[in-house]
Length: 455
Picture 1 (cartoon, one colour):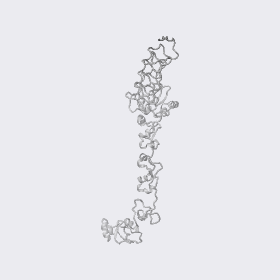
Picture 2 (cartoon, rainbow, N blue to C red; picture 1 turned 180 degrees about the vertical axis):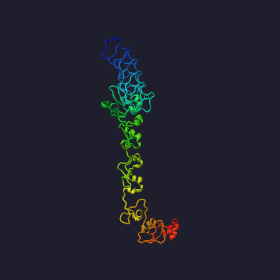
Picture 3 (cartoon, rainbow, N blue to C red; picture 1 turned 120 degrees about the vertical axis):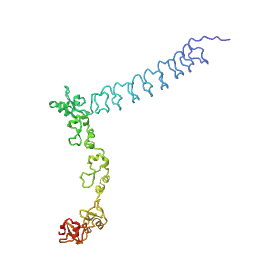
Picture 4 (cartoon, helix red, strand yellow; picture 1 turned 90 degrees about the horizontal axis):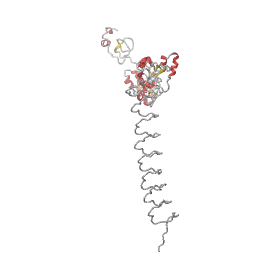
């Protein structure tokens, strides 16, 4: 017979039974321990503690606290988070943020911002802006701009002269380019190239010291000293003594310069290095000495070459002595190079001695070392034959010529070619034309003088 089924217990058992199939209806309260596998349908309320593995589908509403994943999601969220992330993203966003970041980026943006920053940058940009600033700078630049503005401000010059300022409490001389128009149009009367000249002219006496100390030029002043060409002085360079002629003051933009180099380049380019007191890097150290300091042809390397040689280094300066001598003293190369020569022992004609001598140093027949232009011969007879064919003394013979007893012209008359008393006139020279008698000589050479026959 069947046994009665006892009623269910009012409290759960300490250990649940392990049924083969789940119950057809859920229990009124959840179990104290989770099931080994998730249910096929979600519960009506979310659990207080998240599961160890994510669900296959996202929940319909966001959780009250976000999960802290170790890696970011593969796709961005549809709406930005309420709080910014602690580190920037690896790629920039497609649209700019509504507010700028508190710190600037390490690299500049590819395009400028639509609105300017409230404060200027600490360093100027490498290129000028496309439009001028709305307000002028506090201090003008030392050099004027390359092109004028469409609506210029009060003219400012690249070279500003000193003018007198008589405003009470500010008496002195300024060079800020703000001189009144009546001074600007009459610079010779009102403007000066130096502070001292301005103070002496307009604030003499007890006011001079105050003028010199009120607006003293400092190391940053664009034009502490103005230079002008010293055409009325040595005319070798530029000076800044404030004594420029009036016509230079009236056209100071042309004649006065802020620096010595600028003045020298404009007015003394032919003497630039002497004018500036500088020296360029030289292409060589040897130069030809044409000053007369050297007794012979010579190239020097004492670094005292003239200015015109520095201006044309490619031609005048050489890196070696040999190069200098070959270029400038090729006709006297040995002396320029300092090579001593004892001679060739050949023979040449020495004009001051009127004879042939040997190319050597010593006693006769040596006549010293021949010059480069002297023609040399292998022996004395050849030299005498070529150069002294008319004089047998060249060969050193002792034969005394007594003449031919013919006639030739000497001292405006005809004389006999012989040695002795008249009518002998001495031995004729090789170039004298000889005649057989006096009558023929007078008829040919002295036909215009009838006394020739009686002399």
